[in-house]
Image (tube, rainbow, N blue to C red; front, side):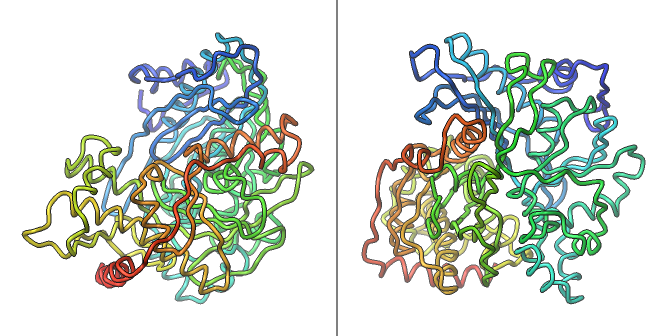
Length: 531
């Protein structure tokens, strides 16, 4: 069976379809792991479909992790600057992790009240809703194949309209030019019901029935990343649809982030049959929610595949700011206020650690990086620019590429590892400096994501950005955000104030003397210019 062109019909049992396609080839997971002996507990599930993998996490009423399951996602790099995922694999991994965790917690006597979904955001899927056929692998948010098209639109004078309508910059990071690429290359030509989806929409559609009346919906935090949504109305913009040549019927309906998005079908996840999906957020907005950044000016930093800074900007669109983008944080419908956010995005953070591990063999596992870097007192003049897929905020240079400079005979593995960690802090400093330049005052950074486990990184970040950095008690703030927004959506938690009492931090990092960091940062900026 060709995974690119296999069809799913209403007569095909869903789980059997994915089992044939993907699940039979998966190795047994090391999870789920149970962390509580309590029985008869009401749980909320978070389905976190990220760039590197898919995770399901079960949370108890105190938002503590009860069980978790994770599967890595295959990365495809067909040509330089191109990054793709197989959308069927994303669905298969979602089903696998949901089933594993559901089986574990139900055996322990727990009940599942609702499911929340969070996802890599701008990744775009073209498919036929009549057959579930993909015409092409999904184009990932890191992909740069449409960079030239963005330049052409900017040169034609469309940049200001895009900026004022969507809050975004004309960059291939976002979904609209990916959709245009699919159309220009005939991917949807033979489809009976040609459709575009971000990953949240794709998973909602599959989990609620697929071609058999699956829900085709999205919500504002994801829709605002497509470059097709009007930031003020939170609906698809006619002017943006016309500019990019995307027809409205190809796009999902936009619902509030806390909605009843439908129930999980018995032939999809039998263990969760009838459980409602009551909350959806894009991954970075979900981390903002998971870090309880409910008041304007509260900011979080996530060190995941990329590095992302989001600051709550309140209930009204805050305007646009040089080097940054404006986006929707969430729309809670009748469960609470809507919120906007100002965001800075660095495309590569943890992905650079993976590169050092997988391509260069410097370390056997990612958690060894800090120990290697601590073997050097400084980077010895080495500068690492992790621009593997261009430069994001505040530079916005799609032609940028990664580089390691300043090498000498005295530089070794430890110096290169330390330079990489320093570069992660420098990337975020560039964004926090942009916030300051725009007059956006930041008081502290609430840090999460896998790389936030490194004390060296967070201490460097505090000193570089002149801000206290608070490491969240749970680094999986993205999953926590999906669970708490879903719990709010189903009434499990009654208010943002109640959810805020559940958040805590594990350690605080305060700024130190910035002299050495400032010298290193200026040298790094020169390396960025050369890259």
